[in-house]
Length: 182
Image (cartoon, rainbow, N blue to C red; front, side, top):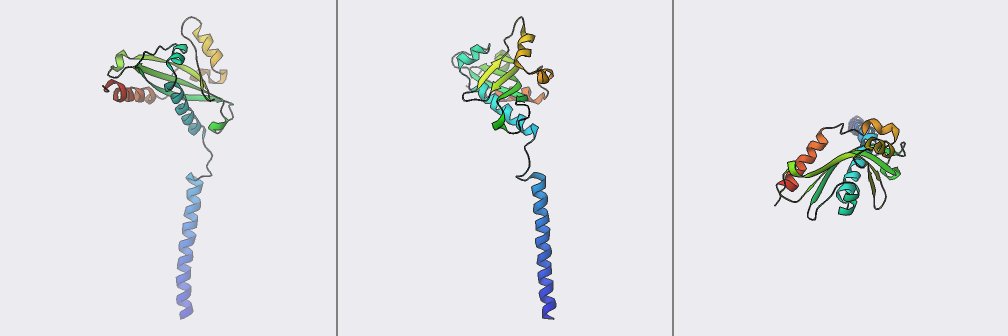
């Protein structure tokens, strides 16, 4: 009788431990630390790096990009990365150049969105310290400058935001951080 009672208790705990082990293995397989970062994850991280590079550029650097920033202006940007070099990079540390479509708005606090200075287009950013930002200058010959800036395999994506929520998000952020600020 004692042996039967001992066996029941131990079998119960063995089943519990086996179930927990299976659940743990399933969790690791679905979302665990062994998961390879996806291209979507990489492009999202690159978009954040590009935004930081654009927002932290000096007024001189903005001027060199064709965007004059006045003293006291705040700059907010959004970017949607669509490619990188080397093309087979899987981690952000492997990326030398990132390509994106961007939108920046600049103005002093209290300025409505409709009168803010805005610039958008394709951008190439070298992920160095400090980052190097290259933007095709507007005007005659612009399409050729874009072709020289963005690798051929990414040309089709250099025409605008695929995700319309990105510029909408920038406008909401602008309204909160600049337009309604005093």
